[in-house]
Image 1 (cartoon, rainbow, N blue to C red):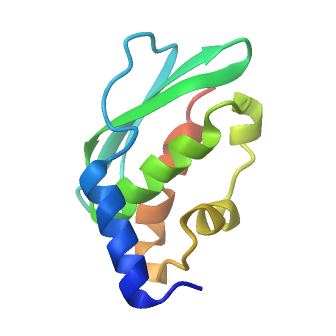
Image 2: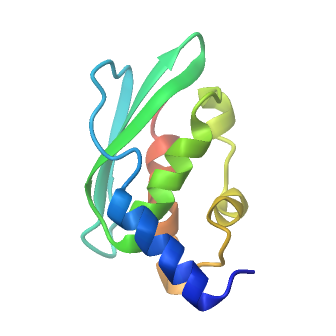
Length: 120
């Protein structure tokens, strides 16, 4: 497990750079979801080609946890089949982030994953 200071530093770096943030020119799939417990709301856009995710972007507004987790998730799913993405869960997200998110922030952590589950 990472120390608190390393964790905060890495999170803030990802948050400030916002990898995968933006819009796709050639999107084939998209979905939007608002986190009912806060103001977080993202739209995820995918470009699926040859049965696999060629590119993924998101846009909207979110807290540090939802922004970082969605950004990291989209990086991980590139090259995956959409059907395999549908099988991802909280354990996968914890592994991707390398941290345990406190219970009150789990909905923030899983927002991107919940949006992807709406994409068929």
